[in-house]
Image 1 (cartoon, one colour):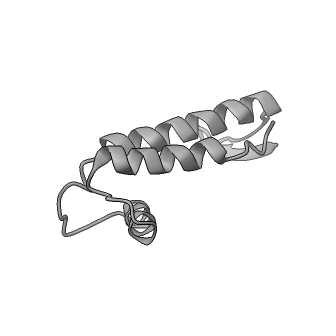
Image 2 (image 1 turned 60 degrees about the horizontal axis):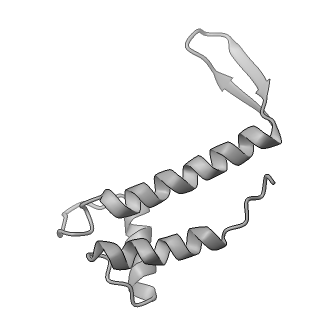
Length: 90
């Protein structure tokens, strides 16, 4: 996969990521997602503002009978989802 991005200088850069690197990124994203699901406290209190991502998480939990405020319930639900996800880069 080729990507373009602006580096710390004004120069435009282009690089190519290998399938192995894409796989590593995908696995890191899954890990970071589950870490967020486990440790964020926004689900345990009523906040006046909820990020769009956390709102999506809350709605998924509500739609599937998962107690979003109870960390083990929320974490088990999303762990099951993530474990079933197929890595498109393998």
